[in-house]
Image (cartoon, rainbow over all chains, first blue to last red; front, top):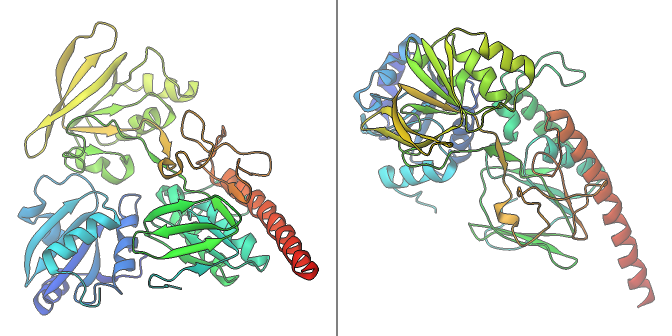
Length: 118
Length: 323
């Protein structure tokens, strides 16, 4: 159970629906650990600003998270969290381990564009 | 309270939202001072990196994340504003009114500043470290240990964290090699003994990591012997780095008195060398860094700052009456 204020993805089916129904999606797959919590915090902070992006988390130890753990873009990742960015259902970027606000914003702006009201 | 480029005034600004900053926020707000906490990362500081806190009096066991959220809720309940994940672009501590500017153009003013920016894990700063972060290099054994099940790994460091985490990593790894730059450890005797008694742990002393080597993932490290000056390649699947903490005080250089380690020099009231500026928590010069000591520092800083503010206010009022 992830104690965040983000929307949670509980199953592979949920995951497929989320990336199928939304153009721009960011999912942080991790645990309630020291490297993951700061990324959830950054995402919660950015939800209001990047309204054209949907933000979710998924528990790393949930067997259903194989959709992220086993993604080719996450091959070689050995640090939590695995953070993946989807555009029209396809992974356009994936990162491993902790990321700060600047790093996440840079990826969001590059892959999905800057917020319209910015 | 976002101001879109217009300056905003507060009675006190706290820089840093770890246990010291949040405690200061609670005390200042409760003293009816308009208080703003500005935090560059996630609220809670190093505290949120702790899975279990079992030595905070009055609480038998709690995660650092939960304790941080309770402290934040308390501060906000007293009227304290908290802004996290901001970037401080400039800071002016001179004169009666201090100012803090963010990278988005917002500027905040207050006669009182409490500095509690905390610290962060020290990195080696050698070639390859950034490239292999999360691809073989880790700073958290509990987070990433299971990625190295039945693999051979290196732990860099010789303090309590390094040796305790080396022992904990033997739950996963088949072999742990501790690489330490000196000929002796800085850890407590019991930690040294436990590591030395563990059959899976080996030691390479008086040696430093010169660089990380690999392509897509880490293949090994180049080691440098500090005595002979000789280097050699050491094959490993992963490296865990535990070489202490550094204070987040780079932005205070030439603005306030720091010691040679970059820690803020404070007096008994947590006062700095600048009137109206106080400091608390892991970034100050002190020996013990615990959540409890940070909370104590934050309390003292806030009470002294509150007294300073009210004296300043009385003087200003008296001056206005004379005029």
